[in-house]
Length: 289
Ligand code: NDP
Image (cartoon, rainbow, N blue to C red):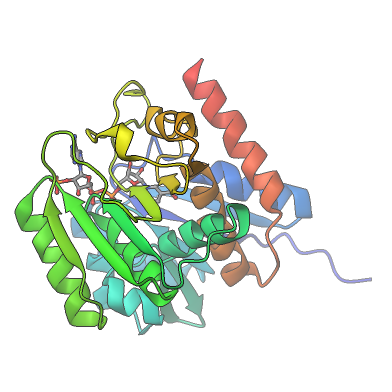
């Protein structure tokens, strides 16, 4: 019989602030379900302490860490190697510690793509997409859609500067001729667009009545419409799209899959996706009541 070990395998999250981040719920449910002696620590790390925190991660021989605001870009200077997507995105949400060498990955766009392809059956190859927003989520999603063979991409953003900066970044790092449109009142989705993605925080709990300012009559039943907002899963945006016959994909799937990909990178095991999904669904229901 193997000798009993009381050692904890450690993973977790560095962010500032972190107190409202419920990611730990998914991992703890998965570790308990599989009987693993692993712990996910939600750690507040101020920007000026990131270097020491990374040294601490190595000193504790942690298996890896998730990064959230404001560390996704600044952590790059401590990373030894990056995945292809992370190189192009220019930000990571996950580090894997391989005996002191840190590998960086960005699983946000990959989680989105998995929900889109596996759950909604949508293949981006030779299709066209509109992304609302030009922040970190939009950037990760755009890169994965381009990798998956998307033919046409339009970035629609409120601030012209940020939108143009993302488009220039994507043109520079991929060979795609991405278009930019400044988000005006009641933006109409152009005809022929197959995929519409809300990659803004509009509609996120507790502002659940807010909806992106678009002309909803321009959504057609042929479109697939996705939201990055995980809480509530059925946003006003997705309800409007469903009412027009479009297939919808919510941000909860993206959240669960991006975590499931990290889980596999850290433990080497397939994640119990449904256990993780029901744990976070339960948590969001508690938040809302
Ligand atoms: P950023 O702050 O990097 O970007 C936010 C984007 O939304 C910007 O383009 C901003 O436009 C736009 N925006 C914000 N408010 C408005 C508004 N009222 N009207 C129009 N545009 C607006 O955020 P992230 O990209 O990191 O995150 C966006 C959302 O994605 C968050 O809600 C986050 O929770 C979610 N997310 C979900 C994940 C999941 O797994 N489901 C994973 C990662 C993120 P401007 O440039 O004009 O300010």
